[in-house]
Length: 253
Image (cartoon, rainbow, N blue to C red; front, side):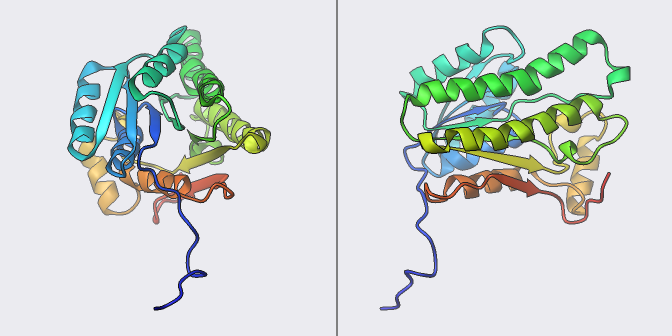
């Protein structure tokens, strides 16, 4: 029999893992939830509309087990609520994927109210979701995956708010990985390039997104799901600290 002991490392199974995916009803979050459910994880997802939640849960049920909550993470107390409901549905948490985010524009083109809401959803809810994850792991091993963006590094005049937030998430993720390593909590940052999702609307229509995916200047959301699967299945000793996934033919725009 061939000895393959040095041909591969031991991978971590996702079967039986209890996973919360914020923003798991559409786009990247939905793709992550479906893939992890298909690998045997029990997933709890959240999103802002009942229609999208039901659509995502229907798909999850075709491949595995899932539950979900309609919630706006920009609202006061929303993070505590989603963690309480996820824990009640799953019996605990092993993995938290912090993904829920909204698009934002240049600072000079946004109202003060819109800026505050973008910061609440895209930054404050990220930090507080990581904080809640630590509390809910309660000393047990766990994984926190933060979905960032290459917008943190590709800076344009219309990206000030979004890029600033995502740059903050990048720094937060690296520091948090160092803080939590000794507590057996792994922290990873995934930075997607341009990816087909509802977030691209109305600037890029569904038809144009399909065209760009065909031209390989845009990713499918499932491509990011595969990346998350990869980092979650590494042995406990290994942390994929930062994973950047971009379309092969995407430039610097």
